[in-house]
Structure formats: structure tokens, C-alpha cells
Length: 349
Image 1 (tube, rainbow, N blue to C red):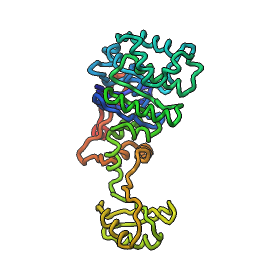
Image 2 (cartoon, rainbow, N blue to C red):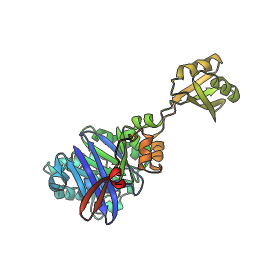
Image 3 (cartoon, rainbow, N blue to C red):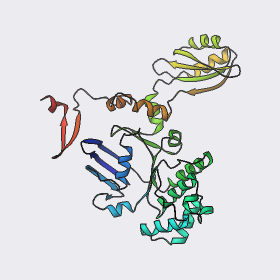
Image 4 (cartoon, rainbow, N blue to C red):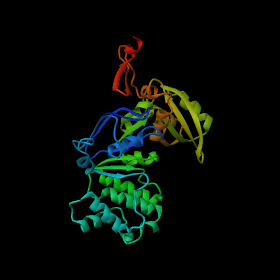
């Protein structure tokens, strides 16, 4: 559905996006993450056809965004962080305008009625947009992205300004739409990304540093199989008991969490599975085990670790991507004469 190959974007002498490639299949809901200035918004704007690319290729459902912009854009619905609203129009009037602008072929009234119900703004359809709350304006922006039933939805911070109940409703809507649409979702609320996205792409310094499921990323970066146990016990006695379990490397108390209970971080030796032995030791001591969970990293922790690395190579090493001794490091440079591909070997020569 979306195929990006060797994408680069230069602003003057600044190379904002560097040789980015990825593909997204129909029906995938992708979390698109990156710190401010990483190149994330630039890539999203290129995908929508708003910005031109310097090098590479972008295809939407087989249509090159450069060669066939109208065909490609017809398959995209875009919700930018600040929705493009005409605030002196009424809600339905605005959606009628977008319908005409997109040259949609569906019957107008039934199509817009369905979208109004879908994003739950049918109760304000005859109100001026300027009189709506920020949350309702965000919903109107979501509605305009759905006009024409596009195959691809690109959503940049779709829950900005919404209250907790509305956030849950939009999250559920995205999950439903993901069954029949390809969705790229950008948000700084990483718990939302983790809740609705099956895969995440993390951008930093203009390059992709991670492209995988949240679960796989967590497994790669939490490879010690450490556990957190919550036990009703005396703190020091349980520390001594757990430290004597075969296969346990270290035990650290995380303090009192509930009445008469403590949390303990238990790290195994050589990635051993010590869950059974830990549970048995706690039972032997006649104590109550309230919970025993894997100490896997959250998406937020993964994002911070990767984007705070010294450089992108260091981030990739965290995920297990090591250069072999014979592997050349390939670098793409953009200059006035076009694209030059250089390797470490050529630089040394």
C-alpha cells in the first residue's frame, strides 16, 4: 500500500531525511515516532504530497507521488496536528466543501451523514466551527480526513485537545478503521501508540533507528528476563530468601507498594527462566505472592533509550544490529551534482 525507497530531503545545506526506506501493507496501523526535529513531520508531509522529495521514491497504492500526484493523493486522508478548518463555516457546510474539493463520487448526503456519526459530531453539524471547543474542532478535522473513504489515513496527533473519554473513543475509532484502512499514527502519547499500533517506526536524526512491533523491541532491549515480584512479607527476610534461589543474579527491593507488601526486582543469571523457582521459594516461606511480572521496557522507555543514544549507530547496537568486520559503512551525500554514495573504505583511500 505504501512503499518508500531511498527517501532523502534537503533544506539548503541541511539534510533533514537521509535514505529512509520502509513499506506498509494494507490494514496495518503504524506508530510513527520521533523527537522534535528528527525528520518525522518532513516524511509525513512528503507522503501526503505537501512537500517535494530531494531523492528517492514514494508510492501510494502503486502510484508514484511525484509522477502521479493526483492519483496518489486521492488515496490519502490527512489530519495535521492543527486541522485545516474554515472557522466561519458550519460543520456540515465545511464537510460539503471538502467533499467537492476532493471530487468525491459517493452520494454526498449519506456519505457525510455516516462520517458525522462515525466521529460523533452529528449533534454539532449545524454550528459554526469557531464556536466549537478544541476537542470538537479536532473531530471535525478527523472527519475531513475521512471524506472520500481514502485507503490511507495519516494522523498527526489526532487526540490533541480531547478529554480522556474522547481519547478512548478516538482510539477505538482508529482501531476499527484499521481493519479496512492503512493508518500512520503520530503521537507524543506513547501509551496510545502502544494501545492501537501493531508496529512502530522510530525516526531520529533523519534516519530510521527501529522498525518492529512494540513487543519485539521490548524483548530485544529487555533481554535479561528480569522479574518484579510483589510479596506480602518482611522486606529483609524476603531479600535474603530470594537471593538464595538458584539462577538468581541479584535482588533489589523497590520499596513498599501496598500495605504489608514489597516489590522486588529479580535479575537472573544468563537470561535464565527463574519464575518457577522464585514462586516456589516464596511459597516455602509461607508468604503471599500478589504478582510476578516480567520487567519488560515500555514503549516510552524504549523510545527514550534509543533517541538519547550517542548516535544512530549506538541505538541500532542496542537492538542487536552490529557491523561485521568486513562490512562497509555506506553513506549517502547530497550535493549540487546529485547523490554520491561513499563507503568508509573509499574515505580512507
